[in-house]
Image (cartoon, rainbow, N blue to C red; front, top):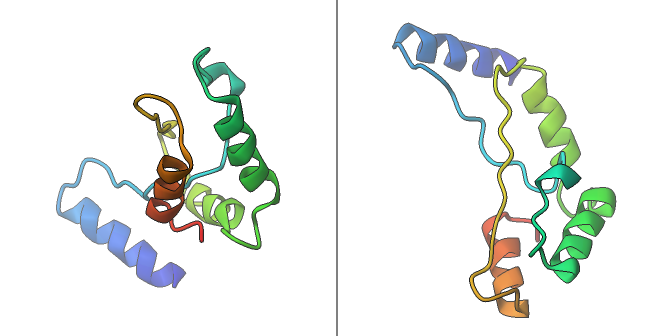
Length: 101
């Protein structure tokens, strides 16, 4: 698999791709400095529980380790927001979009 990915990266470079995005890895590298004062304490607790104990449900840590071995030049935080506050339905939508379950 690694050889295929290395070949793909070389191909993208030869085509002049300025950058390659490895995709979103949810529930990793959570940083309190990015938390907004309006953040939902409930959503924050759920996300942190998944980040800390959710390896059996979603292998985020191993996915992040795999991506980091390629020595990325930029790692940008990505966050989600809920218009009008969080609800069970909106939280379920995030779970479905990120393929956590």
